[in-house]
Length: 406
Ligand code: GLU
Image (cartoon, rainbow, N blue to C red):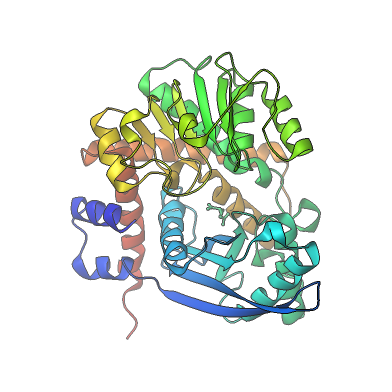
């Protein structure tokens, strides 16, 4: 993140003082979260919330539950949220949270107690006008419902706008669940159009079969492309003639793993990333495309569904090879865009039809794609650095107008 920020800051000739502000998080909180486990024992988990910037509005970003969570990762992810919100021009800053835990080894009751106590520990820094969490890796609608209830209980007022990605019946937005995957599919469509590639029949490989990868693959399948490979956290399936995506997702839901899916080879993750295809969508986790495999990637287009799936070293290799990379802060911004719609609907107390949500999101994604391509052209750089330039411009503009309180 820092490397890209540095490069873009140079190109836009960012003031050195403003750079120092943007290179440091605004606020960080580390909390110990004691939880009574089902077996009667007591465990203390470590949780974080980092607010990278509040220059453009309340901090915004997900909360992830994973054994790999660490403060540096949360810091980088919170900065990515600042740039992402600025790229799609929604009035939020950037934040991220995480708890070091293994949610697959915890019961629903343990996860509920973990979420509630973490929320209680964060009460002083979150709020609809301060910092609005959302789902991320291994958290979802139920997690957000517990968070909303805990916050509302403390404030003695029902406060749906404290969090986005809630269940629809509790003030969530229609279309939020599909938003990130659909936004990824729109970005694939715009990238293909930009490069003059066909709008149907492209071979697509997707790493990850969750909310982003799985639904993204489903939308691209519906748009007439061929999903030739897709993975979950254990392994991947491959069929050059294209996989029947609705059947793949049903299988995964049923069996909990892609292994054994009929008429497909079972391959590993590294084989998946280097399959023959036109479009590669890394939609799992960070640092998947690195200097170790970037030279072997066959795709012409990479659309980053995950946050930070490509290392800065891999960027240089892909750029030299002419691979078009639609960067994370653009490609997966459909999620936070609909989070913004959810927050707006909560504050209005008036809810929109699903098609209105999708139409407004599509428009923002297409406009942002064009903004990023124009910015890359203006600064004679990659779409990634072009996106950073655009985002930095917007954040720096607000910082400048607000000035430094002293
Ligand atoms: N966790 C998602 C992301 O990384 C969504 C954040 C949000 O909606 O606030 O973009």
